[in-house]
Amino acid sequence: MKNQFLQISTACWLTLSCAWAVSSQAATPAKLLVVSVTKGFRHSSIPTAEKALAEVGQKSGVFTVDYARTDEELGQKMTAESLKQYDGVIFANTTGDLPLPDKQAFIDWIKSGRAFIGMHSASDTFHGFAPYLEMLGGEFQTHHAQVSVDCRNHDSKHPATGHLGPTFTVFDEIYLLKNFHRDQVHVLLALDSHPNEKTPGFFPISWCKEFGKGRVFYTSLGHREDLWDPTWTDKNGKREDSKEISEAYRAHVLGGIKWALGLEKGDATPQSK
Image (cartoon, rainbow, N blue to C red):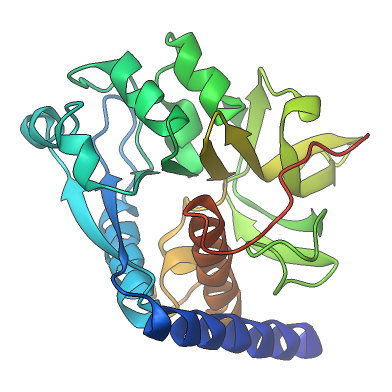
């Protein structure tokens, strides 16, 4: 396990270093809107996620962030006109039916060539809005107790997973999904057995896909504070995910964002089963 952490840490450092080198040559960083409004369950990790995304963007130089944290800010920043100022949108643990000014205009905006990045409960959002679910590629159904799982890496060359080994061991709340069509997405991480019951099966964790001229990256990981923040501890000074795992997760997110923005190449072809 120690060797795995060392390998992950080295790979993460190389990934972030490459991002810094690329960003130093870029004219301006991309501008992303981080949406954290919830109309259902609200994750306690949202403030940590918001901070982590800002830190990843700033340290890599790849992107800057703006926030939509309230209904009012959604109304102001997600009109068809306001969206023109952004290169992409991140749904950071959103839930429920968000009061967007024009939901279809948002979907069309992504399809026209923008980036969408969905974190964890982005799949627990807009359950009744078919165009969103089609764009995302899967829908939250349920979850059980948080658990340690071995995520199998299905693409060792993709920017979101190239720094990981054959498996990525992580402790988190693992989603069970519905309306997922494997032949329509490019799987990045998945489980070979049920996260809790351990019965054999296919359980997707992260994927990417092209959507019209746009790009979509989703990871169901991101429930826990210690996954987002390598320095976080609970009131007893403890954490389940190590600092190295948190850094690997941040590199996973950064790689997915870079791919979605078109800054790094990566396959989006659906794999055969």
